[in-house]
Each structure stands twice: as structure tokens, then as C-alpha cells.
Image (cartoon, rainbow, N blue to C red; front, side, top):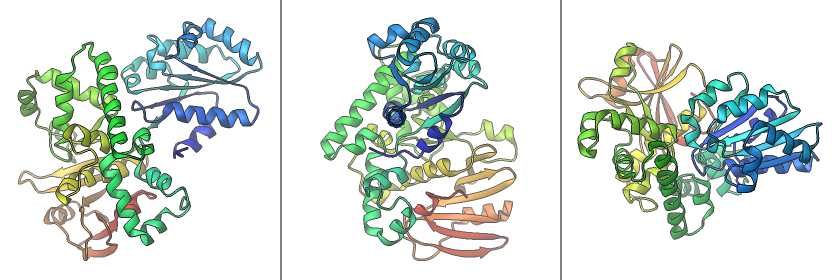
Length: 416
């Protein structure tokens, strides 16, 4: 069993009346997570029922609220219990369906999951305002991956493991940057089996999520878009060039990219600017939600080995770590780029506080401060700036800013 960091929060939310709504990429582990929750409740002698829209004999009980209530009263009685509903995105009127169940004030607690296409059903979120708590389950983070691969021996001291077992940690880093964090991929032991797993996942995303969303059977243009974007991780998107390369219109391109974000394939980050209109109008940079899904369309899944191949992959990993550990709310992640193309990889914006972050896939011996980072510090005078690298931990004062070199693993269990 792979332990998920989101689990304690979900477990705590079982005591709340609001619907626990779990979303995430296809095959990120939502069904397994819900099954684990159900097992824990069963061990406590709680009344539970698990229904899945993909199971034909379950679907008849999910056709209407009345049909479901009759099933719940039969199986759980009228005193209440915990009801798990998997693959809710299959329900055409899912938002109204769940809203009605909540508003009936039944004695049942609902835990509901849906894959990426659920995100496109905006009426679900609108209908459930004040009635749900949203939990997003990503594929395995690097911290979850390392914790699992070390048999949870260092769960209470992962930073100690990275600091002392550096060779083992480096091997795990290379493995994760090659194969990513899909649970099915991680659980397979042989490379061939990992390739077969990611191939099936990739095809299911295209043939089920994308084909369903685009209402088309052929998804070549979308597949080509994913491949091109995979080769541009950390780089700016040129919409005009992309549109021409793929042979699709500008509006279609924008729609495809929006879909790719909504089904948890990739993220776009905007350049930092104090002028919001300028920030929105400028070209964004692209990062993938899962490194294996990024590598697969490029033919690099499990075969990347050189520093040049790992440079942008490592940068993508740092992006994932930053977005997983920064507090929600007023915190956002950008990049910074000047007209003369001086660039800082990331700028973490926490209210009025700015934290520039430069990424180096190197075992630094001493602090190497890029000119662009110095330029940023001179212009914005941040209190701290970070250079994330493989091994070095050191601090240097430059003007009004503390430049801090830190090993990437120190970001895993802390927020900037």
C-alpha cells in the first residue's frame, strides 16, 4: 500500500457533513485511496457502501436520488453511514445530483471521486458551493515516492535520509525523473512493465478523457500538442508558432491547452509583473503534472540519462515541489524574464513578498549566482533568493538579499 500525504486530511474530513470530493488525473489512485478509507471505517465497525459508475449493477442505484436513498436505507439502514461514489464524472447532471443529496439532509456522509473531466463540469463546483470540500490527488510526489521506495523506514526523517544516503537518494531521483509518479508505474518492477503501464495510461487519457471532451474519435492534433509541449518544458509558449506547427486554428489551440490543464496533464505559469494586464498578455511557460507523462511522448520514458536531458526535467520537478509545499491562497508561482531575455526560473509571490528561485541540476561546490538573479534582486530587493541544486547548502549576502543555495530535498518538507 502506497501511503498518500492527502490521507490524514481526508480522514479528518469524514467527521464533517460536507461532501468530500476527490479529483485528480486518471489513475492517480483515487479509487485505491477511497478503498483504503472504506477499509479503515470497516475496521471501526462503521456502516459503509461503495458504488462505482463504471459498474453496471451499481449504476442502476445511481440513476436518481430516490433510487440511491432506497439502496442506502436497504444496505445501511436509516441511522446513517459512509457512502463512497466513484467516477461521478460519468453522471450527466452530477452537480444537481450531489446538491440534491446534500440538501435532503440524509444521515449519510458522501465521499465522491471523479477524474480530470470532472473539472470541466463547472456546474458541479457551482452547485456544491458550501456543500463540499475539494481534495486534489496528484500522482505520487517525489516525497511520497521516496518514502514508499525506502519502505517507510525514514518517514519521520526523510531529510536525514537525503543528507546521509546521498548515493541512494540520487538513484531514486534519477528513477523518479525517468518514470514519474503514476502509482501503477511505480509499483511495476521491470522497465518493460512500466512502459506498458504508462502506454495504457496515456492511451486512456487520449481515448477516454480527451475524446469525450472534444467529442471526436481522432485525437492526433491533441496528441501532437502534448508532444510539442513536452519538448518545451520550462520554455515560453509561442501560440502563433504552435498553431502553425499543429495545423489547427488559434482558438482550437487555446481550447486544447485549456483541456490539457483541466485533465491534470500540464500547468501554465505566467511571467511576474507588477502590471497585471502585462502579466496576463505575455507568453506563459509550461510544466507537466507528471514527469513520466512528460517523458513518454518524447520517447524518453525510462531512458533519459544525460545532464542535458535531465536539466528541464529537474526544473519541472522543482516546480512540482514548490506548488505542492507552498501555502494556498495568496501564494502564486511565476517566472521572470526581461526584454533582453535575462530569466529567473521561478518567482514565488506571497502577497507583497517575492522569493526568486533559480534551479541548477548540478552538485555545486560553491554558490554560483546567475546575472539574471542578481538583476532581479537589484530591481526588487527580496529578503531571500534561492538556488536549488543537488547538494550544496550555503548562504551569501548580496546587497539587501540573502542568496541561499539549498539541496532540492530541503524543499520537500518546507515552504519558502
